Length: 150
Ligand SMILES: [Zn+2]
Image (tube, rainbow, N blue to C red; front, top):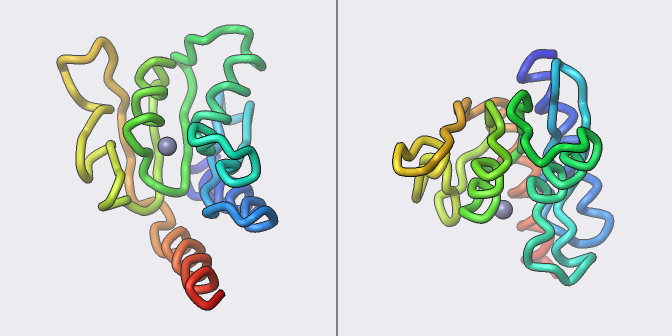
């Protein structure tokens, strides 16, 4: 599966968050080119500040793999992960992170911090940024425009 194909799945997953008023962010975890977990942001739905798409997808992937170490996994997420989710990606020891749009206000994979490539941490994650960046930005900006119109 190409990064573009995986991002299309993450975008589709992110749109599901619109059904419960959450910011449309989607994440998938791939192992050997297969989707082992696919989740979207559920912060508003669950009233849980930690219910970000990436965290939920990593938890599902660990259950599916019966191992918290996701060393052969790729995390594909529409928006650049925040410090919590980048920290979780490092903690899970994932091999690769792919994201769509940068997040200048919270991004921790190159924008504000770079937790995925900090030699002080015990694991580094290879990062590919900007996959379907425009599609991700369109989805987010249409959500925030609709929120402002309310
Ligand atoms: Zn996050």
